[in-house]
Image (cartoon, rainbow, N blue to C red; front, top):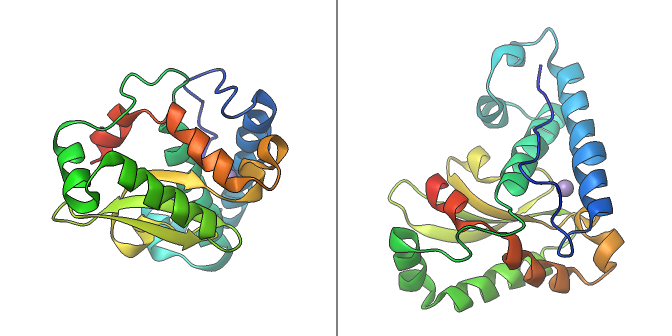
Length: 189
Ligand code: MN
């Protein structure tokens, strides 16, 4: 049985309002958890880790497991006052090598999030040699399903921002950098 993750903070306001956080975590993510538990009961997936389910399933089981994995990585990368507000060390060196600067990286990340048509996620992912890429994945898809390492993600489903930003997805995405804790992303890298 999967359980809803606890959030390691009380509020991310004003970047994400308390109302959006409560609905996103307590209603949307809770629904994916409840759905997955119903779907996998009595199946081969019951004893698998979330990552294994994402790699091996399809259809409704994949959609719900993928959304749990995506949201856990999304919520756990944030902090109201990030201890590390920008990448450093090896990860910064990689970003500068591939994009020229952290600002250029952020600009491409925001552009890919803004232009993703419909619902989905924009991800920073790494391959087995540490090479980075920014990728759009539709609906519940994610790097794990493609054998890549997930590092950082912005949710561009409308439920992530519509109460606070309405149609202004780009404004929401550019505000999110204020709460990304790069110490979490560096650990994943
Ligand atoms: Mn979401």
